[in-house]
Length: 430
Image (cartoon, rainbow, N blue to C red):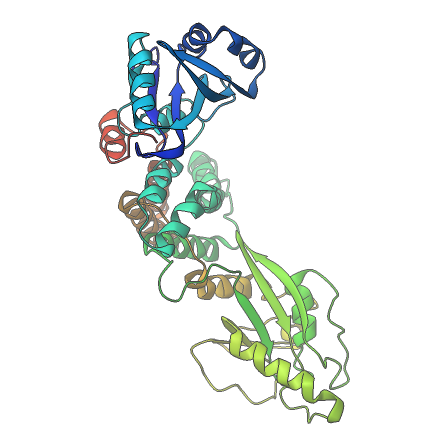
């Protein structure tokens, strides 16, 4: 693309209205408008400004407002100008003809967003989200586009990249020193980290903003009998001491609210009274509120101490055994200790995997989803190969492949023909 070209496009429909907006980007924005109205020099003396004045279009004096952003502090990274003027289609046509005569040209589809990409103002994922937001036909599609446009996808992919590199770097250092009998250990949580990463990438690829997704923060409620260790676990997950932990039954009467973060996911956390506590008259309202919390929860942590009866299996529940620091734990049970932190990382991973479908927003295009899917498959293969003898070089190759697929989502090395195809689907004014 020739950056020397100065482009223009209407930013709204060409129909009678109170106001029309013409958007201009490129080096001729300032000199041409100064020619049309010398008084506009005042607005161009600052990095950004708004000024009301009149434009001379032939024999007409048209009231207008100029919205100025100087390069590189603009949406496209170039000198940018918006001309706001009365919404008469004939005036719009006259202004366009005047600017064409001065060397400013009509923008092609998506050219404003493409220039933002080429000047580092957007990555390709967010650039695609601009087009998806304009074309959205449902609230779910709008939420997905906004999620990507505001950087949500970039943050999740950055988290995946960091997790992959945390395994790949010591893996490849081990190859460098294998002839010297120097062993470079992998992170102790390498397998769990890769499992979490593959799960996140799969969820992104699967379009998580489905019927079960909500636009709010997922709600996790701790449930279980008295003295199960719910309050201690609540404090461990939330990183606070908001819940009063005590060996005496019935310490928690009303619900206690807090928050915790699972990777990039913010979660509401609620501790409730023991399910086996017989309420006194003063506790009736508290028990009613507990029932309401349980009904609203996206995930129930069914907390039990050793020896307490197990909870009945349910789709929204995740069984958790506490007091893991006091002795051996049964195989296949998610056992934790809120005091020592044992098992907490595994619990957080399990919570994350269960809650991802309840978070609105994933990817903004089929192309992004396909790259996330391929990255998830590569990470899953690498995790399997790490557990096999003599297959670490193949695992490293798969991790490199995953990083390439993630990079393709943001388009750091996107070929021109791919950009042409993507931006050809945009409207002219974007």
